[in-house]
Image 1: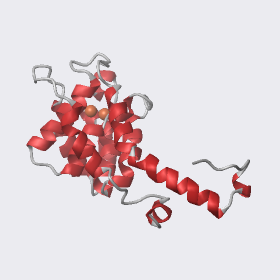
Image 2: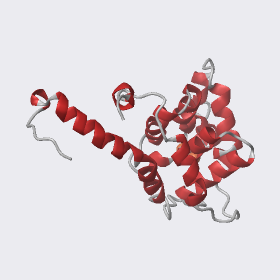
Image 3: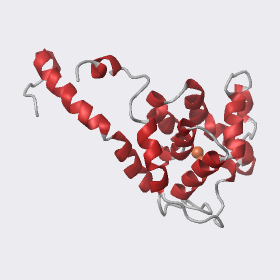
Image 4: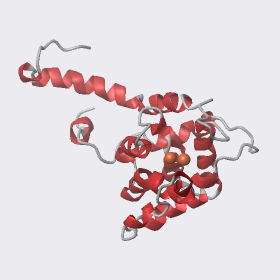
Length: 192
Ligand SMILES: [Fe+2]
Ligand SMILES: [Fe+2]
């Protein structure tokens, strides 16, 4: 269904009932759009030993094998989804996508993972590997340091069997089934 106005100022409550109905259908498709976007990382090596999709899949698999919960595993899976469109700030993009669905701790972890990962290589680029130290007082410092050390850092192993995104698709659908927080949550939760 479509509305017919030339500006939001002339839109009516009835128009917005139609739009909300359409939005609800659109939002149900978010996990599939995320999975399709993840697939774009396949065969994108960027000089790394594994392509960006396998790196994400290995990160998720390591987290799952270690017994992390579903939300954490999805964060691990999507932590580098921003590489395509946020090539200069990829962690911010991933964090923004995950933010409606995850805890503050996991959001912070994904948003800052690039700086924490820098501890392992920034010195090779003439950068400060201790850049993460400026977050020493954060309550999520150790949470993020742990994510990088246990999963992100070691997920470049091209001797591991190739993984498929299909394995994690149900988890993405589950964690992204409904937002915990969103500007539009109240409007979307109302009615049916
Ligand atoms: Fe990253
Ligand atoms: Fe990564």
